[in-house]
Structures are given as structure tokens and as C-alpha cells.
Image (cartoon, rainbow, N blue to C red; front, side, top):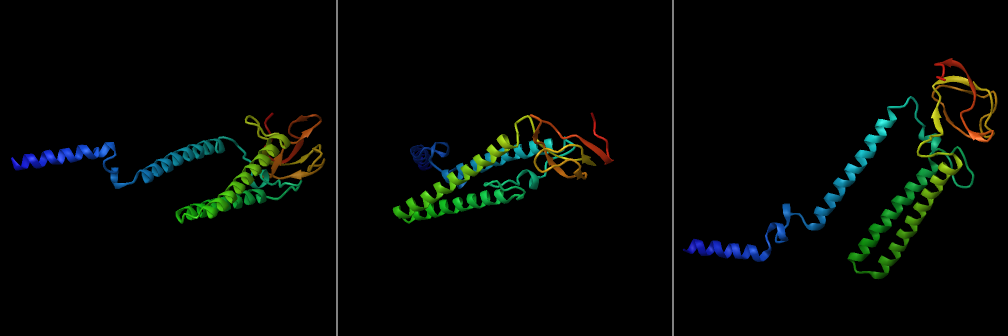
Length: 207
């Protein structure tokens, strides 16, 4: 009889607490916040894995691929041929805004309202700066360099050759290029099209 009473009291206490699946205890001895953070990290990992797999499938399904140093070489103010300089600036802004967010959280734990406001304002400034940089970069790629979802103006030569006409920008008639050298399709004669060139060595282009 005593064992039955003890079991009934245990069941009553368990029911009062709500049980493991009703908030009575922490699953896997992990807090709700920690468990949700793991869910977020896993979903983020799956999302980026999908992006990387798609990138790899595209990358190895085409004969040429744009060189990042050539694609991301523009800098605000009309500066050109500055490989990855603007990307470096954006990375610094992103890391700096992450630091200011951490400092805001620290001030929140210390119950320092003024410190939270100051560091949150700096975080907002960093976030807006980063978004502004992204807007400029994509505007330049789509508006200035004619990049679209279906069209990639960047490429890499697969043979050596010489240009028969210029594009009015960096390439002039008679300029030579080598296999592996990057190029950007500019607008000439009112339309975007690859420049005419003559192959001097390497694989002949397919027509």
C-alpha cells in the first residue's frame, strides 16, 4: 500500500509540473533558448549548404567562370581595377556592426540603458551602411555592367587572340588577350554583345 501511495504522489507531482512535453522539464537538459538557437543554426547550415551545392553545380557545368578579382573590382567614386577592395570594406563594416551589437548586449546585462542606446545606434549605423554598400554594388552590376538573372556579362577566354574592334572602355582594337584572361561585355554600337576577335592560338570558338 505504501508503494502505491508513493507512486500516486509521484504521478500527481509529475502531472502538476506538466510533464516533459508540456514544459515541466527541459528536453535533453537544454534551455528553450539554447534549443531554439540549435534549430536556427541547423536551418542556417542547411540553407547555405543548398546554396553551395547549387554554386558547385553551376560552376562545374560551364567551360569558363568569372574571376572574383575582376568582377568585384569597382569602387565608389568611379575607381576601377581595385580587386576586392570594396568587398573588404563591406566585410569590415559587417564585423564592426557585429561587435557593436555584442557590446549592446553586454550593456543590457549590466542594466546600463545609456550604453545600450549608444551601441545600438552604432549597430544601426553599421547595418544601414552595409545595406547602402550592397545597394551600390548591385546597382553597379545590374545597371552599369548589365548583369541580370539570365545574363552574365563576365567571362574568361579559352584561347589566345586579338580583338578586331574596341569597346570604348578598356579594350582597344588590336589588343591581345591570353587564355584564362577575364573580360566584361560592354555596350557597343547600341547593344551588348561579345567583341569580335581573331584566335591566334588555342581552341577555335564554336559558332
